[in-house]
Image: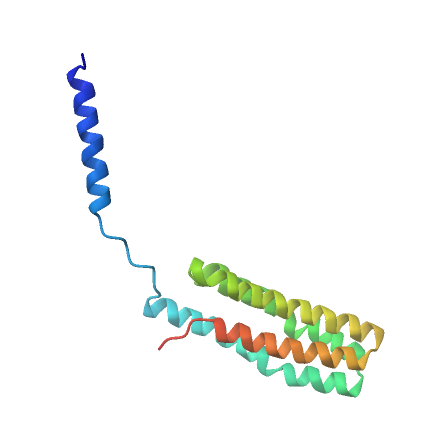
Amino acid sequence: MLNKRSIVAWVMALLVAFLASCGSPTPPPTYSDAQLQKIELSAAGIQALRDRMDELESLIQQGEWVNVRTFIHGPLGDLRSKTTYLTQSLLLPKDKTPVLDAAKEIFEDLEDIDVAAAEGDKNQALSNYKEAVADFDTFLGLVPKNS
């Protein structure tokens, strides 16, 4: 025979299962206005770096390879920390992966420009520059904005 404790345990288990199945799903997380403001502020710093990319193109066109490499490691050197802060600290998990992937593409393009500059390959550097600008725009397009 079953004792009273086992019967009570079974009844409680069935009750919990029933109540869990009747619960409504929670809505997906969204950004608050304060979070969106922080994201926009962070994205503005990244946009400022994007706006300086014309300087890099000019240096590539002139074949100033030392200055190209200095620009990549100098003014654009903050890019990795800024994108990491934005993706890891401010974005919801569902938005992190595509934004992080776009940031990685930018870094790869900048590394390729750096290699082309070290080799003095103007055509390759310009090609990688165009890819970097496109990836920058993709990155900024993926960042959530305040409606």
